[in-house]
Amino acid sequence: MTAPTLRTDRGRALLVLALATAVTVFTATVPLLRDFFDLRVYYGAVHTWVHHGGRIYDYRVPGTSYGFTYPPFAALVMLPLAPMGRHTAIVASLLVNLAALAVVLRILAGPGWRRHGWFRWSLALCVLALFEPLRDTFSFGQVNLVLLALVLGDAWLLTTGRDRWAGVGIGLAAAVKLTPALFIGLLLLARRWRAAGVATAVALAATGLAAWADPRASRFYWTEALWDTNRVGRLDYVSNQSLQGVLARLGDPDRSLWAAVVLLVLCAWAWRASRAVAAGNWTAAFALTGAAACLVSPITWVHHLVWLLPSFAVLARAGHPRPAGVLYAVLCTSVVWLWFEDSSGIDGFLGSNIYTWITLGLLLGLPTGPEGVGGAPTRRTGRKPKYVRYEGLRPARREHAPDAAGPPFGRHRELDDRT
Image (tube, rainbow, N blue to C red; front, side, top):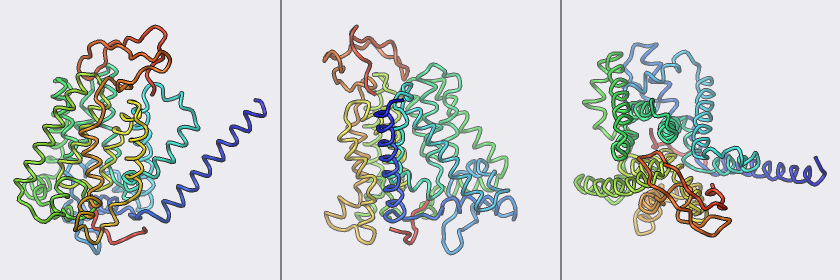
Protein backbone atom coordinates (compact mmCIF):
# COMPACT_ATOMS: atom_id res chain seq x y z
CA MET A 1 0.00 0.00 0.00
CA THR A 2 1.48 3.36 -1.02
CA ALA A 3 1.96 6.35 1.25
CA PRO A 4 -0.76 8.47 -0.48
CA THR A 5 -3.22 5.64 0.00
CA LEU A 6 -2.33 5.40 3.66
CA ARG A 7 -2.79 9.15 4.06
CA THR A 8 -6.16 8.97 2.29
CA ASP A 9 -7.35 6.10 4.46
CA ARG A 10 -6.10 7.87 7.56
CA GLY A 11 -7.90 11.04 6.57
CA ARG A 12 -11.13 9.17 5.94
CA ALA A 13 -10.84 7.39 9.26
CA LEU A 14 -10.29 10.71 11.04
CA LEU A 15 -13.31 12.21 9.27
CA VAL A 16 -15.51 9.29 10.32
CA LEU A 17 -14.19 9.57 13.89
CA ALA A 18 -14.94 13.30 13.96
CA LEU A 19 -18.46 12.78 12.61
CA ALA A 20 -19.14 9.94 15.04
CA THR A 21 -18.00 12.17 17.91
CA ALA A 22 -20.23 15.01 16.73
CA VAL A 23 -23.19 12.66 16.40
CA THR A 24 -22.56 11.29 19.90
CA VAL A 25 -22.42 14.79 21.39
CA PHE A 26 -25.59 15.77 19.52
CA THR A 27 -27.58 12.73 20.62
CA ALA A 28 -26.41 13.16 24.23
CA THR A 29 -27.35 16.83 24.49
CA VAL A 30 -30.06 17.82 21.98
CA PRO A 31 -32.74 15.12 21.47
CA LEU A 32 -35.23 13.88 24.01
CA LEU A 33 -33.97 10.85 25.91
CA ARG A 34 -36.70 8.21 26.12
CA ASP A 35 -35.29 5.97 28.84
CA PHE A 36 -36.49 2.77 27.06
CA PHE A 37 -40.04 3.59 28.10
CA ASP A 38 -41.80 1.33 25.59
CA LEU A 39 -39.48 -1.55 26.41
CA ARG A 40 -40.51 -1.07 30.04
CA VAL A 41 -44.12 -1.45 28.91
CA TYR A 42 -43.36 -4.70 27.05
CA TYR A 43 -41.19 -6.03 29.87
CA GLY A 44 -43.70 -5.22 32.59
CA ALA A 45 -46.68 -6.63 30.68
CA VAL A 46 -44.92 -9.91 29.90
CA HIS A 47 -43.63 -10.33 33.46
CA THR A 48 -47.07 -9.58 34.90
CA TRP A 49 -48.60 -12.15 32.55
CA VAL A 50 -46.03 -14.92 33.03
CA HIS A 51 -44.78 -14.54 36.61
CA HIS A 52 -47.66 -12.91 38.48
CA GLY A 53 -50.75 -14.41 36.86
CA GLY A 54 -52.05 -11.02 35.74
CA ARG A 55 -53.60 -10.04 32.44
CA ILE A 56 -51.50 -8.51 29.67
CA TYR A 57 -53.59 -5.36 29.46
CA ASP A 58 -53.81 -4.76 33.23
CA TYR A 59 -50.19 -3.69 33.59
CA ARG A 60 -49.33 0.01 33.89
CA VAL A 61 -45.85 1.53 34.05
CA PRO A 62 -45.53 2.77 37.65
CA GLY A 63 -46.53 6.41 37.95
CA THR A 64 -48.25 6.48 34.55
CA SER A 65 -51.47 5.34 32.92
CA TYR A 66 -49.71 3.62 30.03
CA GLY A 67 -49.78 -0.11 29.40
CA PHE A 68 -49.62 -2.66 26.60
CA THR A 69 -51.49 -1.56 23.44
CA TYR A 70 -50.55 -4.14 20.79
CA PRO A 71 -52.52 -7.24 19.74
CA PRO A 72 -52.05 -10.28 22.01
CA PHE A 73 -49.77 -12.01 19.49
CA ALA A 74 -47.17 -9.29 20.15
CA ALA A 75 -47.02 -10.44 23.77
CA LEU A 76 -46.35 -14.01 22.60
CA VAL A 77 -43.49 -12.76 20.42
CA MET A 78 -42.07 -10.91 23.42
CA LEU A 79 -42.12 -13.93 25.74
CA PRO A 80 -38.28 -14.18 25.60
CA LEU A 81 -38.31 -11.09 27.85
CA ALA A 82 -39.84 -13.17 30.67
CA PRO A 83 -36.61 -14.80 31.97
CA MET A 84 -34.52 -11.64 31.45
CA GLY A 85 -33.51 -8.97 33.91
CA ARG A 86 -34.13 -5.33 32.98
CA HIS A 87 -30.58 -4.58 31.87
CA THR A 88 -30.41 -7.78 29.83
CA ALA A 89 -33.68 -6.81 28.15
CA ILE A 90 -32.22 -3.42 27.20
CA VAL A 91 -29.15 -5.04 25.66
CA ALA A 92 -31.35 -7.54 23.79
CA SER A 93 -33.53 -4.70 22.47
CA LEU A 94 -30.49 -2.81 21.17
CA LEU A 95 -29.05 -5.90 19.49
CA VAL A 96 -32.36 -6.84 17.85
CA ASN A 97 -32.84 -3.30 16.52
CA LEU A 98 -29.27 -3.20 15.22
CA ALA A 99 -29.83 -6.50 13.41
CA ALA A 100 -33.10 -5.20 11.96
CA LEU A 101 -31.38 -2.01 10.80
CA ALA A 102 -28.67 -4.07 9.08
CA VAL A 103 -31.36 -6.06 7.22
CA VAL A 104 -33.19 -2.89 6.17
CA LEU A 105 -29.99 -1.23 4.89
CA ARG A 106 -28.88 -4.38 3.07
CA ILE A 107 -32.20 -4.66 1.23
CA LEU A 108 -32.48 -0.95 0.40
CA ALA A 109 -28.86 -0.81 -0.82
CA GLY A 110 -29.59 -3.50 -3.40
CA PRO A 111 -27.23 -6.06 -4.93
CA GLY A 112 -24.38 -3.58 -5.30
CA TRP A 113 -24.10 -2.87 -1.60
CA ARG A 114 -20.47 -4.00 -1.38
CA ARG A 115 -19.24 -1.40 -3.85
CA HIS A 116 -20.01 1.44 -1.44
CA GLY A 117 -17.10 0.47 0.82
CA TRP A 118 -16.50 1.02 4.50
CA PHE A 119 -16.14 4.80 4.20
CA ARG A 120 -19.55 5.42 2.62
CA TRP A 121 -21.23 2.98 4.96
CA SER A 122 -19.63 4.69 7.95
CA LEU A 123 -20.89 8.09 6.76
CA ALA A 124 -24.34 6.61 6.17
CA LEU A 125 -24.47 5.21 9.71
CA CYS A 126 -23.48 8.59 11.16
CA VAL A 127 -26.27 10.25 9.17
CA LEU A 128 -28.77 7.56 10.18
CA ALA A 129 -27.92 8.09 13.85
CA LEU A 130 -29.26 11.64 13.52
CA PHE A 131 -32.63 10.56 12.09
CA GLU A 132 -35.13 11.32 14.85
CA PRO A 133 -37.49 8.37 14.22
CA LEU A 134 -34.51 6.01 14.32
CA ARG A 135 -33.08 7.62 17.46
CA ASP A 136 -36.43 7.27 19.18
CA THR A 137 -36.84 3.68 18.04
CA PHE A 138 -33.63 2.74 19.82
CA SER A 139 -34.13 4.92 22.92
CA PHE A 140 -37.76 3.84 23.40
CA GLY A 141 -36.91 0.18 22.77
CA GLN A 142 -39.54 0.14 20.01
CA VAL A 143 -40.43 -2.62 17.51
CA ASN A 144 -41.16 -0.72 14.28
CA LEU A 145 -37.70 -1.27 12.81
CA VAL A 146 -38.13 -5.02 13.21
CA LEU A 147 -41.52 -4.85 11.49
CA LEU A 148 -39.99 -2.80 8.64
CA ALA A 149 -37.31 -5.48 8.20
CA LEU A 150 -39.99 -8.20 8.01
CA VAL A 151 -41.97 -6.27 5.39
CA LEU A 152 -38.92 -5.44 3.27
CA GLY A 153 -37.86 -9.06 3.49
CA ASP A 154 -41.04 -9.94 1.62
CA ALA A 155 -40.27 -7.27 -0.94
CA TRP A 156 -36.85 -8.85 -1.51
CA LEU A 157 -38.44 -12.29 -1.94
CA LEU A 158 -40.91 -10.97 -4.50
CA THR A 159 -38.32 -9.14 -6.58
CA THR A 160 -35.78 -11.96 -6.65
CA GLY A 161 -38.24 -14.65 -7.69
CA ARG A 162 -37.96 -16.47 -4.34
CA ASP A 163 -41.64 -15.83 -3.72
CA ARG A 164 -42.60 -19.19 -2.25
CA TRP A 165 -42.51 -17.72 1.26
CA ALA A 166 -43.41 -14.16 0.30
CA GLY A 167 -46.14 -12.78 2.56
CA VAL A 168 -44.93 -14.44 5.75
CA GLY A 169 -43.10 -11.32 6.93
CA ILE A 170 -46.03 -9.01 6.19
CA GLY A 171 -48.42 -11.41 7.92
CA LEU A 172 -46.28 -11.59 11.06
CA ALA A 173 -45.84 -7.80 11.10
CA ALA A 174 -49.60 -7.27 10.77
CA ALA A 175 -50.26 -9.70 13.65
CA VAL A 176 -47.83 -7.80 15.90
CA LYS A 177 -49.17 -4.37 14.94
CA LEU A 178 -52.13 -3.44 12.74
CA THR A 179 -50.47 -0.70 10.66
CA PRO A 180 -48.46 -3.07 8.37
CA ALA A 181 -51.75 -4.70 7.26
CA LEU A 182 -51.87 -2.07 4.49
CA PHE A 183 -49.04 -3.98 2.78
CA ILE A 184 -51.50 -6.82 2.17
CA GLY A 185 -53.45 -4.25 0.19
CA LEU A 186 -50.29 -3.56 -1.83
CA LEU A 187 -49.96 -7.26 -2.65
CA LEU A 188 -53.54 -7.23 -3.90
CA LEU A 189 -52.86 -4.13 -6.02
CA ALA A 190 -49.83 -5.91 -7.47
CA ARG A 191 -51.96 -9.01 -8.17
CA ARG A 192 -49.64 -11.11 -6.09
CA TRP A 193 -52.53 -13.32 -5.06
CA ARG A 194 -50.43 -16.09 -3.54
CA ALA A 195 -48.37 -13.68 -1.41
CA ALA A 196 -51.51 -11.81 -0.31
CA GLY A 197 -53.11 -15.09 0.65
CA VAL A 198 -50.02 -16.21 2.58
CA ALA A 199 -49.84 -12.87 4.43
CA THR A 200 -53.52 -13.04 5.37
CA ALA A 201 -53.29 -16.68 6.46
CA VAL A 202 -50.20 -16.03 8.59
CA ALA A 203 -51.79 -12.98 10.25
CA LEU A 204 -54.98 -14.94 11.03
CA ALA A 205 -53.05 -17.98 12.25
CA ALA A 206 -50.88 -15.85 14.55
CA THR A 207 -53.95 -14.08 15.88
CA GLY A 208 -55.65 -17.44 16.44
CA LEU A 209 -52.59 -18.76 18.29
CA ALA A 210 -52.72 -15.77 20.62
CA ALA A 211 -56.45 -16.35 21.20
CA TRP A 212 -55.70 -19.97 22.11
CA ALA A 213 -52.90 -18.93 24.48
CA ASP A 214 -54.98 -16.30 26.30
CA PRO A 215 -58.66 -16.14 25.29
CA ARG A 216 -59.50 -13.38 27.82
CA ALA A 217 -56.76 -11.08 26.57
CA SER A 218 -57.81 -11.57 22.95
CA ARG A 219 -61.46 -10.96 23.74
CA PHE A 220 -60.60 -7.78 25.63
CA TYR A 221 -58.30 -6.44 22.91
CA TRP A 222 -60.58 -7.03 19.91
CA THR A 223 -63.78 -5.90 21.62
CA GLU A 224 -62.56 -3.04 23.85
CA ALA A 225 -58.87 -2.01 23.80
CA LEU A 226 -58.61 -1.70 20.01
CA TRP A 227 -61.35 0.95 19.90
CA ASP A 228 -60.10 3.00 22.87
CA THR A 229 -57.47 5.44 21.54
CA ASN A 230 -57.12 6.95 25.03
CA ARG A 231 -55.17 3.84 26.02
CA VAL A 232 -52.49 4.79 23.49
CA GLY A 233 -52.16 8.50 24.21
CA ARG A 234 -53.58 11.93 23.43
CA LEU A 235 -54.49 12.42 19.78
CA ASP A 236 -53.43 16.09 19.88
CA TYR A 237 -50.00 15.37 21.35
CA VAL A 238 -47.35 16.91 19.09
CA SER A 239 -45.63 13.56 18.53
CA ASN A 240 -48.75 12.26 16.76
CA GLN A 241 -47.80 13.03 13.16
CA SER A 242 -50.78 11.36 11.50
CA LEU A 243 -53.68 13.09 9.76
CA GLN A 244 -55.76 12.42 12.87
CA GLY A 245 -53.13 14.28 14.89
CA VAL A 246 -53.32 17.29 12.57
CA LEU A 247 -57.10 17.46 12.91
CA ALA A 248 -56.95 16.94 16.68
CA ARG A 249 -54.55 19.88 17.10
CA LEU A 250 -57.03 22.03 15.18
CA GLY A 251 -59.73 21.22 17.73
CA ASP A 252 -62.00 18.22 17.97
CA PRO A 253 -63.47 17.71 14.49
CA ASP A 254 -66.14 15.21 13.56
CA ARG A 255 -64.67 11.76 12.88
CA SER A 256 -66.41 11.82 9.50
CA LEU A 257 -63.96 14.50 8.36
CA TRP A 258 -61.03 12.30 9.33
CA ALA A 259 -62.62 9.33 7.53
CA ALA A 260 -63.06 11.43 4.38
CA VAL A 261 -59.43 12.59 4.45
CA VAL A 262 -58.24 9.01 5.01
CA LEU A 263 -60.28 7.85 2.03
CA LEU A 264 -58.67 10.50 -0.19
CA VAL A 265 -55.20 9.49 0.98
CA LEU A 266 -55.91 5.80 0.33
CA CYS A 267 -57.14 6.63 -3.18
CA ALA A 268 -53.93 8.61 -3.85
CA TRP A 269 -51.89 5.71 -2.46
CA ALA A 270 -53.67 3.13 -4.62
CA TRP A 271 -53.14 5.24 -7.76
CA ARG A 272 -49.46 5.96 -7.14
CA ALA A 273 -48.59 2.50 -5.82
CA SER A 274 -50.22 0.96 -8.90
CA ARG A 275 -48.00 3.11 -11.12
CA ALA A 276 -44.92 1.99 -9.21
CA VAL A 277 -46.01 -1.64 -9.50
CA ALA A 278 -46.54 -1.26 -13.25
CA ALA A 279 -43.00 0.12 -13.58
CA GLY A 280 -41.55 -2.72 -11.54
CA ASN A 281 -40.33 -0.28 -8.89
CA TRP A 282 -40.80 -2.38 -5.75
CA THR A 283 -38.92 0.08 -3.53
CA ALA A 284 -41.27 2.92 -4.49
CA ALA A 285 -44.36 0.73 -4.06
CA PHE A 286 -43.33 -0.30 -0.55
CA ALA A 287 -42.19 3.24 0.30
CA LEU A 288 -45.54 4.70 -0.75
CA THR A 289 -47.36 2.09 1.33
CA GLY A 290 -45.27 2.90 4.40
CA ALA A 291 -45.98 6.63 3.99
CA ALA A 292 -49.71 6.02 3.51
CA ALA A 293 -49.85 3.76 6.58
CA CYS A 294 -48.30 6.51 8.70
CA LEU A 295 -50.84 9.05 7.44
CA VAL A 296 -54.02 7.00 7.88
CA SER A 297 -53.17 5.42 11.23
CA PRO A 298 -55.07 7.23 14.03
CA ILE A 299 -51.81 7.61 15.95
CA THR A 300 -48.38 7.84 14.34
CA TRP A 301 -45.76 8.77 16.89
CA VAL A 302 -42.51 10.22 15.59
CA HIS A 303 -40.68 6.92 16.06
CA HIS A 304 -43.19 5.23 13.73
CA LEU A 305 -41.75 7.30 10.87
CA VAL A 306 -38.93 4.79 10.39
CA TRP A 307 -41.38 3.58 7.71
CA LEU A 308 -40.17 6.56 5.65
CA LEU A 309 -36.64 5.17 5.25
CA PRO A 310 -37.48 3.40 1.95
CA SER A 311 -38.69 6.75 0.55
CA PHE A 312 -35.22 8.23 0.89
CA ALA A 313 -33.73 5.22 -0.88
CA VAL A 314 -36.18 5.85 -3.74
CA LEU A 315 -35.20 9.53 -3.99
CA ALA A 316 -31.50 8.68 -3.95
CA ARG A 317 -31.84 6.01 -6.64
CA ALA A 318 -33.94 8.32 -8.83
CA GLY A 319 -31.21 10.96 -8.79
CA HIS A 320 -32.81 13.43 -6.37
CA PRO A 321 -30.24 13.70 -3.55
CA ARG A 322 -30.90 17.37 -2.75
CA PRO A 323 -34.62 17.14 -1.91
CA ALA A 324 -33.91 13.87 -0.11
CA GLY A 325 -31.19 15.58 1.93
CA VAL A 326 -33.38 18.57 2.83
CA LEU A 327 -36.34 16.45 3.92
CA TYR A 328 -34.07 14.06 5.80
CA ALA A 329 -32.37 16.98 7.58
CA VAL A 330 -35.72 18.31 8.77
CA LEU A 331 -36.56 14.89 10.18
CA CYS A 332 -33.31 15.02 12.16
CA THR A 333 -34.03 18.34 13.88
CA SER A 334 -36.80 17.44 16.39
CA VAL A 335 -38.38 20.69 15.16
CA VAL A 336 -41.95 19.67 15.99
CA TRP A 337 -41.10 19.84 19.70
CA LEU A 338 -40.89 23.64 19.45
CA TRP A 339 -44.70 23.49 19.57
CA PHE A 340 -44.78 21.05 22.50
CA GLU A 341 -46.72 23.50 24.71
CA ASP A 342 -48.80 25.40 22.14
CA SER A 343 -49.54 24.50 18.52
CA SER A 344 -52.05 27.29 17.86
CA GLY A 345 -51.78 29.86 15.07
CA ILE A 346 -50.49 29.55 11.52
CA ASP A 347 -46.95 28.82 12.70
CA GLY A 348 -48.27 26.09 14.98
CA PHE A 349 -50.37 24.55 12.21
CA LEU A 350 -47.42 24.47 9.82
CA GLY A 351 -44.61 23.74 12.29
CA SER A 352 -46.19 21.23 14.67
CA ASN A 353 -47.31 19.09 11.72
CA ILE A 354 -44.20 19.42 9.57
CA TYR A 355 -43.41 15.69 9.69
CA THR A 356 -46.96 15.00 8.45
CA TRP A 357 -46.45 17.44 5.56
CA ILE A 358 -43.21 15.65 4.65
CA THR A 359 -44.95 12.26 4.72
CA LEU A 360 -47.79 13.61 2.57
CA GLY A 361 -45.28 15.16 0.15
CA LEU A 362 -43.49 11.83 -0.20
CA LEU A 363 -46.77 10.05 -0.88
CA LEU A 364 -47.71 12.52 -3.62
CA GLY A 365 -44.29 13.26 -5.10
CA LEU A 366 -42.15 10.13 -4.81
CA PRO A 367 -40.82 8.99 -8.22
CA THR A 368 -42.67 5.91 -9.45
CA GLY A 369 -40.75 5.22 -12.66
CA PRO A 370 -38.46 2.25 -13.30
CA GLU A 371 -36.24 1.72 -10.30
CA GLY A 372 -32.90 3.49 -10.13
CA VAL A 373 -33.56 5.85 -13.01
CA GLY A 374 -36.30 8.40 -12.49
CA GLY A 375 -36.06 9.36 -16.14
CA ALA A 376 -32.46 10.55 -15.79
CA PRO A 377 -30.00 9.93 -18.63
CA THR A 378 -27.30 7.37 -18.09
CA ARG A 379 -23.94 8.72 -17.05
CA ARG A 380 -21.79 7.68 -19.99
CA THR A 381 -24.03 8.14 -23.04
CA GLY A 382 -26.38 10.95 -22.05
CA ARG A 383 -29.22 8.83 -23.48
CA LYS A 384 -32.15 7.53 -21.51
CA PRO A 385 -32.21 3.72 -21.25
CA LYS A 386 -35.06 1.83 -22.82
CA TYR A 387 -37.25 -0.44 -20.75
CA VAL A 388 -39.47 -3.32 -21.57
CA ARG A 389 -42.69 -4.30 -19.89
CA TYR A 390 -42.64 -5.16 -16.17
CA GLU A 391 -44.76 -7.81 -14.54
CA GLY A 392 -46.05 -7.12 -11.04
CA LEU A 393 -43.37 -6.29 -8.51
CA ARG A 394 -40.71 -8.37 -10.26
CA PRO A 395 -38.71 -6.42 -12.84
CA ALA A 396 -38.38 -7.94 -16.27
CA ARG A 397 -35.28 -7.71 -18.47
CA ARG A 398 -33.74 -4.22 -18.60
CA GLU A 399 -32.22 -3.08 -21.88
CA HIS A 400 -29.49 -0.42 -21.90
CA ALA A 401 -27.66 1.11 -24.78
CA PRO A 402 -24.62 -1.08 -25.53
CA ASP A 403 -22.14 1.42 -24.08
CA ALA A 404 -24.29 2.64 -21.21
CA ALA A 405 -23.43 2.27 -17.56
CA GLY A 406 -26.01 0.73 -15.23
CA PRO A 407 -28.31 3.03 -13.23
CA PRO A 408 -26.67 4.74 -10.20
CA PHE A 409 -27.45 3.62 -7.28
CA GLY A 410 -33.56 18.13 25.10
CA ARG A 411 -33.23 16.24 27.26
CA HIS A 412 -35.81 13.96 28.93
CA ARG A 413 -39.19 15.66 29.24
CA GLU A 414 -42.50 14.41 30.60
CA LEU A 415 -43.44 11.46 28.44
CA ASP A 416 -46.92 11.38 26.95
CA ASP A 417 -45.49 9.81 23.78
CA ARG A 418 -46.62 6.23 23.67
CA THR A 419 -46.38 3.08 21.66
